[in-house]
Length: 298
Length: 298
Image 1 (cartoon, rainbow over the protein chains, first blue to last red):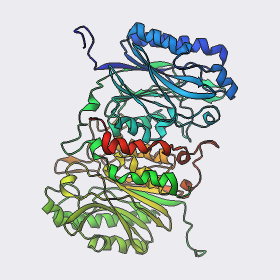
Image 2 (tube, chains in turn green, blue):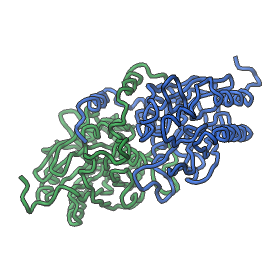
Image 3 (spheres, each protein chain N blue to C red):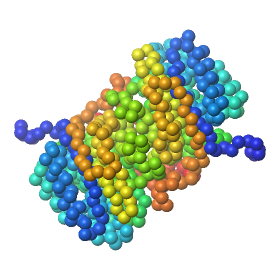
Image 4 (cartoon, chains in turn yellow, green):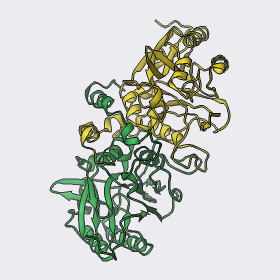
């Protein structure tokens, strides 16, 4: 039972940390220290759910599987999860962060959810991008985690190119989707005249059509020739960015106060419209049939 | 067999007509005449595939079913389809346009595809918005039509809020999606600082994630208290608008030269990435399960 002094579950101040981790074993300790410092700062600013980029403890650009093994840790028993858990416990907050995970011979591009009572769960990236396919094993499902602040769904980077993912998370009742990213390249142009990248718009669209806020933390900087796109954002239940989209260059933290109960009432379109109810799931079977077997050659 | 003088199938100049039809029987003849004039102008400008808004021959805001019956026509045997067909034949072009259709007691919010050889087929809007539910019968499928210029998929307005629709059209091999719209309202804000409405971004996102161009024609103006949002656009295979997004206010026609063969080669992300191939259809079954029966209360 909630005590009288315990804060209300919503609104919740959320934070998207846009940072610049660097691959290389010599950088790992610095990367983790930087995540802890950024989480502390966000906690000082009142954030209770803090999202960091993909592979935030190791950087991204592994040259070989061997190098990835050397960087990787067990989840949740490795030192990075331990450090995040200690901090989450001490500051009474929730952290979502990308981590290079190893389990047996398997490497995973994982996002963990850690709360005031420690490790809650993980999502292993299901849609691997480019050379990730040579390094990581893909995950096999889209969990949604029940927490004291609401139901939290996770996705990682290339997943947002597949609108099925946020749909499946929303259909399980996610009150917020946390998106941990290393957006790195799309077919040109990378940015439009407003300075936004396509991934920002994919995030807005996914949020809007399912009526679920998305906290999308991307990284910046360059690594072994790859340039990351920044443009982190936090969308409201209507899909629009709250307080604007971050720059493509600068380390920063975005904040927003989200009412994580908004997804539970009917989306206010009109008495005759509600996005989940208006879905024609009776007609979507062909989606699987066409793509599972009979899709035309492309 | 194609003769030496016949034009190559691609690139094809496409046009999105942003117009202002008006409901009311006294306006119907003017509405149809306006569509013919705009098609002629687009043909003069070299367009071979011309997309007009939803319900382009009648306007949108029917007060009653009786009023809709009075405006509606048979497809393809009514006078509007006959007029569009005559013009398409004479100018050797393809027209996609919204029309108020009646068949027996059923009213449909339909988009027709008409080519140089006459009527090709129709799509009856499957996702009905707001009071459309009181007027129209929803359609029951997502056809893609094989034509001499490529495979053409159709959708109407509220359909784009359901990313399943463009996915299903793309999975059937659509080379271009024609989107006939009367975008009228979204939860505020209606527009961002760039003057774009959310539907523009939904169109860009759907186009980008399936690697298929979308020609989206919306209407402008007001009708019985409803204001339409304009912001028509034509996206390239990369999802970005070609030549910008139309204004929210003005009647205009957008043009772009689309290579309708681009969707047939692998989308050029990298040797290791291809959007259709990267889909994890093995994991998408839950989409149906969750939404068909066990979705959590929202």
